[in-house]
Length: 180
Image (cartoon, rainbow, N blue to C red):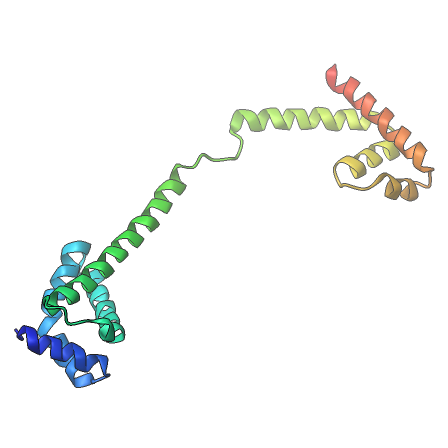
C-alpha cells in the first residue's frame, strides 16, 4: 500500500492527465475500492461495473481533490461509496416501478361487465334499427363520429334546422326504446 503522501501525489499527477500515475493509483487502491462497491451492491458483476465508473470519475474529478490533512483514501472511498449508493438507488427505483406496475388494477372490464356491455350494445343497435335508416345514420354520424349538424345537413341535402329536428326526435325515440 502506498503512503498518504504518495497517494496524494498520484492524485495530483492524475489531475494533470498523467496516465502512468493513474495506473499506479489504480493498482494501489482498486482492491479497497472494489471492496467498498461490493459491500454496498452485494453483486460482483455490478461492483466491477461500478468500480470502472469510480475510476472514470476519479480521472475526471482528480483536480477537485484538495489536500486537507485527511487521508486521500477517504476521498477515494467517498467517491466509490457515493457512486455505489447511486447505483443501488437506481436499482431500487427501477424495481419499484416494476413492482408498482404489477400492482396496478386492470382497467379492462371483467367478464360480467363485458357481458352487460355486450347486451346493452345489442339493445342500442336494435333501437337504432327501429329508426329510419338515414336518421339512424345521422345519429351515428353526429354522436359517434363527431360530424357537425351542418356537415350532416349537407350530406343528406336537408336544411340545418331539419337535421336538428331529425336528431332531436331520433334521440327521443332511442330514449323511449331503451327505457322499455
